Length: 192
Image (cartoon, rainbow, N blue to C red; front, side):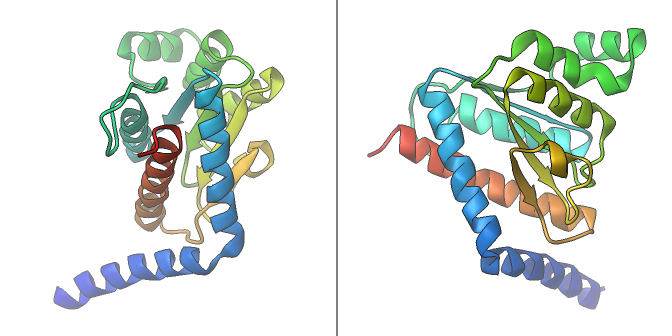
């Protein structure tokens, strides 16, 4: 059992070490911090979407912006699109589960807003459709995926494709990078 625990921790460290050495990925994180900061400063919002554990991560990261990260400061306009269960179940029932995020993006987001989609495969149908709608509206898209990027690779203005194909290791890296982004955006908007 101890060897298995050590192996899992080692695997997680290895993925993060690979990210640490990946200049292109680090530059993408830097670019995302700048684009989210600029969007918030211009009065736009940042919305998140995901499924399962990635929905939990979406809600977690949105709360870091709308609540606080380190600093007592004003709330930033950010939410996770799955939080209205009545809407979610109605649209999934009346249309399709693949439509749940696309309809919200179409109805509530505008050019200048940022949509962050979290999907380890990059192929979640509801996130792909949301990104397709976002593209038509001039909404900035940020994909958090696994190694290949999946279908989101072509639909993301900024792609954080974690160099792993193991779902838990990808999710661990998503939350690490998400926290980095939240911390740096908060510091840029609320210095001191």
